[in-house]
Image (cartoon, rainbow, N blue to C red; front, side, top):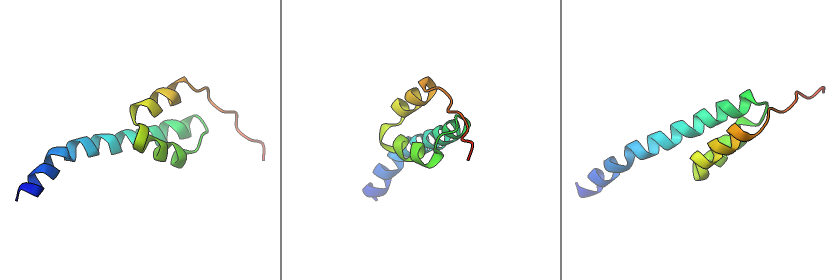
Length: 64
């Protein structure tokens, strides 16, 4: 029973980190960048990836 309680204590942390990764993916797509790449980068780097995304300029759309 003790194993389940220790997992439940960390559950909000994982939910928050995963939500941040989804937000970063949407933010990246809004700046014409790869949402999947930024989602994956956000999993280990979290708020640092958000800061980088906010500071990066929007990419120009490609012609072809």
